[in-house]
Structures are given as C-alpha cells and as structure tokens.
Image (cartoon, rainbow, N blue to C red):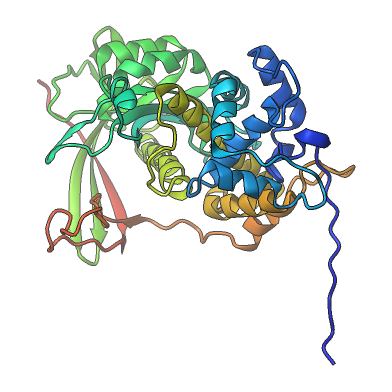
Length: 453
C-alpha cells in the first residue's frame, strides 16, 4: 500500500491588497515600513487605495530583477503563487505598465541611497587592509532596448564592426571589495566616460578608505580630487608616463609628483606561469601611502589584485542576474527606474550574504556563492516564505542554509584570456585558434628600480 505525505504550510504576509507586496525572505532586509518611508519621502504613495498600491508596485519592480527572463505579468504570477486562498488582483500588462509609470524612479533611488554602503562584517581578512576599508572604482555598460525614445537619450558605441547593436548606458560604481557591496553608483549615457562620472562619487569617499583603480583613473587632477576626500588611493599608471624620481626608498619604491599630488610609485614585473607557458608584464602603481616601513611595496602590489573584485561584482550583476539580457524598460524614465531596482536587488542579496558570513567567522566571504543565494531568493519569493521575521531572529535563514550547504572551494590563482568565449554570432570570436582554456597559475613579483631621469 502506498503511503502519502501531507505538508501544511503557514505563511504570513501583508493584509488585503498589499499581500502581493513582498520579496520572500529578502523582505526581512527590505520591510514594508522601509518601502512606505520611501514612498512618503518621494510623495509617490497612492492618493486612493488601488488594486496595485504603490508599495506592491515597488516590490514588483524588485521581483522583476530576480526574474529578468520573464515579463511583468509572469512576475506578478510568481508574487502571488504562494498566496493560495488570499484574494489578489489580476492586472493586465497595460495595468502593470501604468502602475510602474505612476510610481516612477524616485522611491527606488531613495531606497538605493538608504541601502548602499559597505556591509558590516567585523574584522575579517580581505575586508580591511591595515585598518583601511579596501574599495574599488570602475565602470561597465548595460544594454537597453533599441527604439527612437531610448536612442534620443542613449547612444550606440562604436566598435570594430561599426557600432553596438543596441544603445548602452554607462554605470560607474564604488565597491567595498571584501563584501562586494555597493558604496555608491552613478549611471548615464556612454557619451561621458568613467572619469567624467567619478566626481559624483567623491562624496562617498572619506578617511579610513583605500581606493583601488585602473589606468583609466590615473589623471593627475582626478587623483588630487580623490586624495582631497581623505581617502588613500592605489592606482595603476601607464608605463610610458614620464614622472620624476624625487627620493628613493629601501623597498624599491620612490617618491614622485603627479601634478601637485605627492605619491609613492612602485614599479614591478609580474610573471604568471602556467602549463601553457609564462607571461610577464610590467606594472606601475602610485599610492598616497608614503611610508615604506608601514606600507611595504610588496604588500601594496598584492593588495592591488583586490581591484578585480569589482569585475566579479559586475559579472554577478550582468551575467548571474541579467544573463546578458537587454533591460526591459523602453523609455529613459523606465530605464532609470529599472537600473535603480537592479542595484537595490543586488545590494539586498549581497547584504544577505554578508549576514550569513557573520555567523561563520571561519569562512572566507569569497566562498559564499552569489548564484546560490540568488536562486534561493527566487524560490523563497515564489513560495512567499519567511516574508515576516518570526519572534526569534534567524540571521542565516533559508537562503543562508542553502549557501552554507554548498560553499565554493577556496579560491585558487587561475588565469584565462579576456576574450569572448561565446559570441552572439555564428562566427568564431577573434578567430578559431585562440586558446580559451583556464589554467592554474603561479605568480612571481620582482620590484624594479628605475634609473634616474
């Protein structure tokens, strides 16, 4: 005789027409009161109670970032899938569009400004270096739909084959490397470069930080502005740049000037060895940390590698969440709304991961899988599970238990070529003879002592 199992599940959500307004377990990081405060502050609360209250629309926009592969009507069905027995509205695609237009981008921007910032993790390796919060700045692009309204605001970038197929926006972010949480971010047309957007991020820099940046940010005027915030910097410079040697230090670094800014320069040769051969590159780094005894050159060289954490964050945003897709919104105002919703959703997931790591001091934050947290959050939303925290605070939660059950292995040094591995074309990207294999690698660093000019 076959046996049967019966599972009875109790869920707790908001009452009445507000019931679909949730993010599953992520709602505990973005409770109803916080969304209501954003709506009140931006004066976007509905003037009369509708089938789609403004609070519900905000959660719909964030839920859409967890499910970028489906349209808004399907996202709505996922929000209401776990609400069996609770009467909910059945809005049309047009009704959902009108509701999104009514709410606008302002409450999403307000929420991002509230949630952005480095997550609290306590004293952990990789979060701070010699007491300084390790941060990075860099830019990336996001693709938007191609229509007359978007092209009037955003342009297609030139490339080897003429121009990109879709218009794009430029996103420049300031990131806490250890937790990959967003400290601040700005975005706009690609007609402006990364360094043009950077001054808008400077108010988020302050003493107690060290900012890592690539060669594109090495302009003397911009570095002076960054240093004026009180934050220290460690930036790569172009090798052909002529700078004076004012004094030499025992660790091989030397004192120099970039415009009116005093910096310490470190020149080194880094060799990466794999089974496929060896590759050597020359790097020149500049820092405002002028004391070679407290901040040795070799340690600063190794610290600079943490800059790649912002590249990983962009991978999580553009590949793990978006899957390389074009954004949904078809108007400039809608794109602004969607980008802020995307950054809020990313920050919620990263904050959740940081809370998980707090409970396990023995775990390197890099071993917590973003993809697993993202998938677990999607499952919890469909089930409308853990929307409201119980009387006993559970820092780990269901999402955390999934992450802890399948930790990533300890990070190893691996290298692979920065090329397109799967082009959206029937033709081979950059030819058929390119080696696309990832290799385990060993690293050796030699500090160079330049001759006096």
